[in-house]
Image 1 (spheres, rainbow, N blue to C red):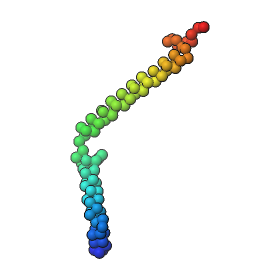
Image 2: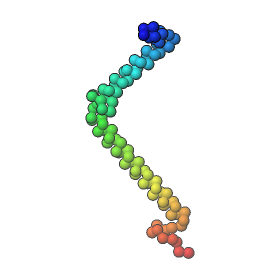
Image 3: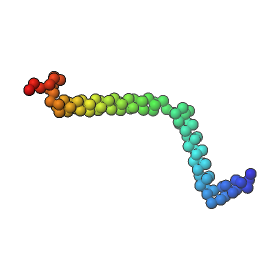
Image 4: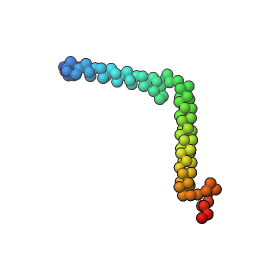
Length: 90
């Protein structure tokens, strides 16, 4: 077992393997502490993020509605419809 570990960590990429393992351990540790159900996660941040996402969704809906209204009006003008929705009498 020791010779296998010596070959693994003492070889050409030994330092790289150790660095990757230590980095993975740190990432897993921080995710456990501060991740989605982490012990030290601040609920105020979650509430703030929820409010921001809601505001962004409302802004997207307003932009989409304005765009659709513009497209609808352009289509009416193209067809020659009047503002009341009827056709022009010719």
